[in-house]
Image (cartoon, rainbow, N blue to C red; front, side, top):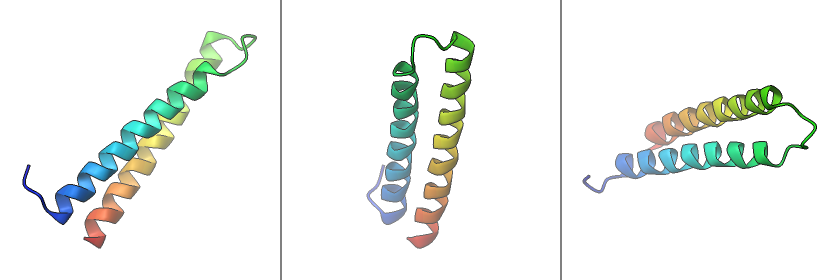
Length: 66
């Protein structure tokens, strides 16, 4: 991949996106044991979707700014 402002913005957005998904998985692991697996999976999916939305917004903002 050639170095450019746009490619750098894409790489930063992808890094933020993967970091958000990892944070969502880590947050799901810290939930109390009393919660059922279903509740934990819904929380993980919700946090993952939120991280994806933030990553897409960041990607669009960075590619427009550069």
